[in-house]
Image (cartoon, rainbow, N blue to C red; front, top):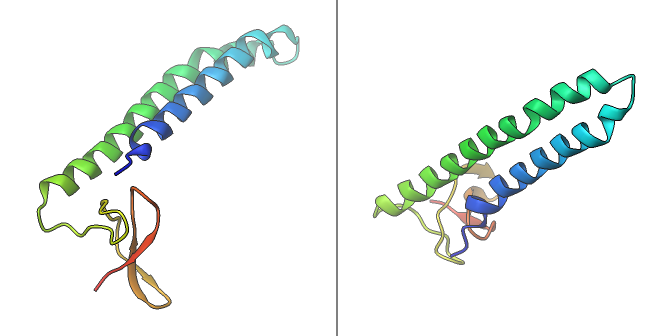
Length: 107
């Protein structure tokens, strides 16, 4: 099973925060109109991204640990991964797999 959500999404959030901080520091701070605002954005962008990435990582980690801890937890019929919340669909209730992203019918 692939846990790409566990590490790729927080990594993308960190990378985006770093790019915003670097652009604000080196590109936008040289302009006279937005120089002061760019300095503020540069000082807060990466710490906010770091906290947000940590929260997303812990949320996903807790979902995976809860799935592993519960022996009666429903598993995906395609890959065996953990399933999300039950949603009402056109052909009955279903859940989306956290690992492969495919839909699995629930009864």
